[in-house]
Amino acid sequence: MMENSSSRISYYHYNAQEYTFFENVSPEECSSLVQHSHVNWYNVVGISDRVFMQRVADTFKIHPLVLDDITNPNQRAKIEEYDDMLYIVLRMFFLKEGKIDDQQISFVLHDNALLTFREVETGLFKKSVGEKIALGSGNLRKNGEDYLLYTLLDVIIDNYYLVLAQIGEEIEVLDLEILSSPKDNHLALLQGLKGNVLYIRKNILPVRDLINNLIRFEISYFDTANKYYLRDLQDHMQRNVDEIDFQRDQLASLMDLYYSLQTHKMNNVMKTLTGVSFVLLPLTFLASLYGMNFINIPHANDPYGFYEVVAAMLIIAIGLTLFAFRRDWLSTKDFSNRDRS
Image (cartoon, rainbow, N blue to C red; front, side, top):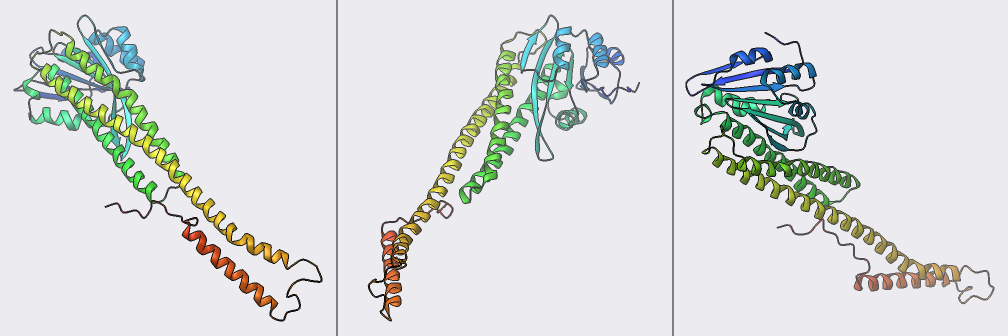
């Protein structure tokens, strides 16, 4: 039965020997398709249709508090255990046309059934997990819904690192540009990257606690052997947290460098203007002195007086310029031509 709602359910039904996939099924059909000899993965896309989501909740006996959390797309990452189900919610980050995007994803784990709830389809799960189930590659078809949950979490956490790698490349490019020639728009780019890093950090730090709690929880239908895989998630999450903390410190240092270079640039401008004033002020004084309207001015009637004054001014200018250079007062060294080898 095709659904007219913007929300839809795709259904993976498999074990080691068999595999079936249904593209668009109704919540009521899902209930009749459940078999305890198979793993049942219900992938729900679209959480804004409250009527449809209530039908899903009624079909799978999802607690009203869990339903409220699923349909509110601004939840903090957490794990909650109910009588016969486990609820997990976290934020998923991914690259879309080279840009960073994110959405909330919720998991409801029953015995022999796993439900995933997402805002929009990204193709990430289908490519990374759905195709492996269809082909029978890896250990997915040989394990239960708890291993499927681990695999999906692994895809999300590995994608964190891909997103952080993208940010890391942008930071490196910006670093080179700022060192070469700091510009006003670099500050806006730095602030944008800093905002992204802080937003991602705020959302993935609770995921580390979520994985730790998942390891500690005693769930009857969560295979003990599969808990060892959760330690792998723990290691990956620690890597992500270390990377994002490094990027945060890197951006703070880069911002300090930007302000330092801008200050250095302004100091060079002021130094140049001061050097020019140092040379021109004595010349201005001489020009003003010989421009006064007095009758008796030395060399005023000398036919070579003009040339003598100009020559004196040139000598003074050259002398003061050489003096300023020897004192390094006119130096405008920067970091753009430094040796980077």
